[in-house]
Amino acid sequence: MYKDSVIKLKQLRTEKNFNQQEVAENIGLSQSEYSKIENNQIKLDFEIASRLARFYKISLKEIIDFEKNYYIENFSQSAINTESLTINNNDIALKLLEQISEQNKILANLVEQVIGLIHTNQ
Figure 1: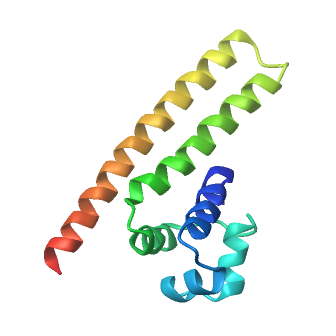
Figure 2 (figure 1 turned 135 degrees about the vertical axis):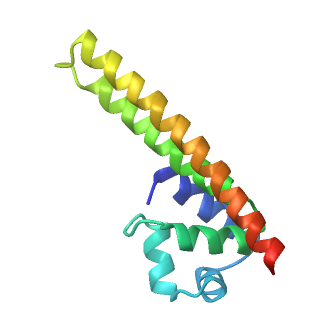
């Protein structure tokens, strides 16, 4: 699970005046399992992210964007904090970061298309 997603999930839950048990029941988890997601003890997977998006009536892209931001922030931070990296390695790291960001945009778009197809077929 990722810092921004954790913050957003807790924020969404409290803004909507739900407790963890209510959210958990609505997305098919136990309160204990959901608590572990909010407390950064287990990773938020695609299926649970999809259920949360439907429950909160937000796009899956919003949840994915929070996770993408985690990767970008932490990848950048580790590149900055690693003094032993050479300029060449920094250039490579930045290019990789750009590629990851682009791939996440593509993934988010594909997820939205899949959700649209699911809704069309229902």
